[in-house]
Image 1 (cartoon, protein in one colour):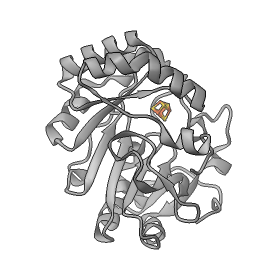
Image 2: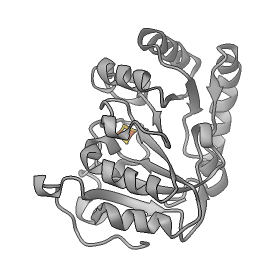
Image 3: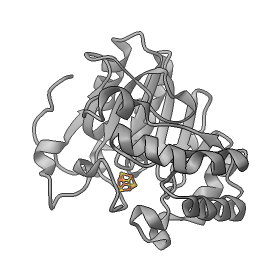
Image 4: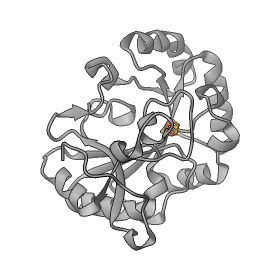
Amino acid sequence: MTALGPAIVELSASDAGTWLIIAECFGVETPTLQGEGPSCGHPALFIRLSRCNLTCARCDTTYTWDWSRFDPRTESTKRPAAELVAWAASCPVELVVITGGEPLIQQRNLVALVQGLLAAGKRVEVETNGTIAPDPALLVEGVRFNVSPKIQSFGVAESRSIVPSALEAFVVAGSAVFKFVASSVSDLDRIAALAAAHRLAPVWVMPEGTTAEAIIAATRVLADAVTARHWHFTTRLHVLAFADARGR
Ligand code: SF4
């Protein structure tokens, strides 16, 4: 599954549970790793779903949703869940990262994919912006949610990006970590307030940046303040290792 398929259309009701709108899949033909969060450094396969319900100004995957700059007919394909499972099963790498965009927009259809991946012996991480409560069918052993709520400084109104009921659902599920992007110490104050208000734990902080220089600079700005709060800190290893090349 190296090449994107034909132009896609939005999912219809009759497709429920079978098809997903995909931006890209990678990690089989050119091996890569999870670059962020608790599994940073682990070999990983990636299934990136297209579409997002937010429009963050600092987004680094705008090709999943910004149709003023990208063409959805060339940036996304509609694929059967079974085909994606077969693609992942063709590779011995255990970890499959389902990311976006916002993958939970398609969670009704995602269940079949996740169940198939688990049956194939995979472990799954779902990367989400935390605005959509997870389907109970996804709250199973072998699935972790890397929830990344977006704060105001990331270029999005928190009235849209912080959804208390959805965050509560992730907290109750007990299978989530909360990973915040930050670039300044004042960002950490906002993260602390959100973590306290919504009982978010464990908190992970990730420096913002799409170049090694930016990540190193932000790391040095943030490191003392993150460790002083006894939070977890992650880098963006794929940026350091592969220069943020698409498909790595
Ligand atoms: S939630 Fe993520 S994918 Fe969606 S716009 Fe924001 S940064 Fe981009």
